[in-house]
Length: 247
Length: 247
Image (cartoon, rainbow over all chains, first blue to last red; front, side, top):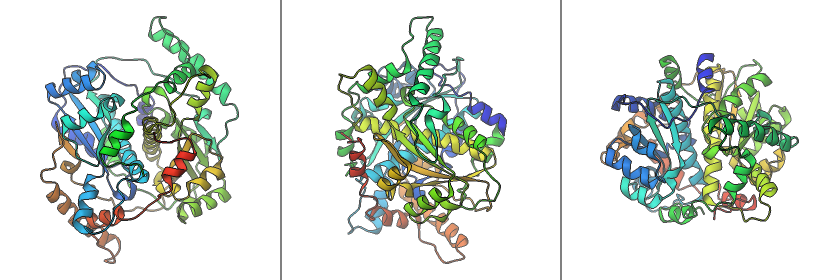
């Protein structure tokens, strides 16, 4: 089994795919593996839409911020947090009772459920020789994505995922030093500045090598710029309209 | 690699552990595997606290709704969404700029990052022979958990995870029929009532067998009851106080 863990340690996002088709059966196997992830109180509050239709993938590529690989991958998965099944059950079994689908808690439950299933599916896909990349850009124009795919009330697209056989071998992107993310018995920020500084150096080198010297901005600078960016400010209103009022 | 997928398909939550110790090195290996999951724009907006101290685990067991296995497992992981590192980077590099850590978007980014890393770690742990169970109860008394573990502003505990060598062999919990969660090219609720009805039967039988006939409530009834339950209504205010204003 350590061989599999070695494989997991080699994960890199794949954005270029060979012509080898990805069958419906394979997608079913991958999503079935996703289903075996844990789910909060077994609510299974997620759904996934496998987009194989080329026109629809082209449209989604545009909606995701003109990410060509969304159009180029043979299968694009749209992972949704989905409380609509639960709401249906409530309407049937407890029609006169107040329900709490709009709470922040249930939003977390559904979003986490979708993420756990997706990551299990990602691991399975990679073990089967495929490559994946998560697409946060699916939240760029959420309303249009929801309309295009007919996503119901009380569901929202959390992220996309391109699936396909790899036609590239990108280098491994280094992660933060382990002590920056792993704490023992309590959160301990001691040494964090040094850990980030060390990672800044590693990442600058990595970027320099990957871009032929064109880029070498330190990770912490990129993160600072990112936090100063007003990204996807529509999410709050979009979610509220979908029934996720985050109460 | 199909052997590994077969293993993933056999996942079940483990709530009873043998005396076999879980070494620090093993936890480090598991969390390192977690780190290799994808992260939105490489923000790595999560942290994990490994709790090995018995008193602290006992206290956490109480805070999680008196879940004995939190005290009994050798290692309890508390997975946190964590924007504090990013905020630190912004304070250093763009001190005069407005930043957007309080948006719903960044809340999703950090929560999903934590979940992807955790699920990768869960898969790695199981491949190494350990068992895990996710503990949503960590959100029961969030404020006290955050204080006990010294979790900083702009971070929050999303879920816990018990780790240990299994001392039980629970039956496999069936999942929803695949067509209930997997849609092709667009969300299609056709047949959903039948799928849920079929699952209700499967789950009633499963519950009956597991409880020696004591329980057999249909899944959809349990879900209806769950949605009618005012659970963890403090989350919104708790998160706002931590800097996640969900704007």
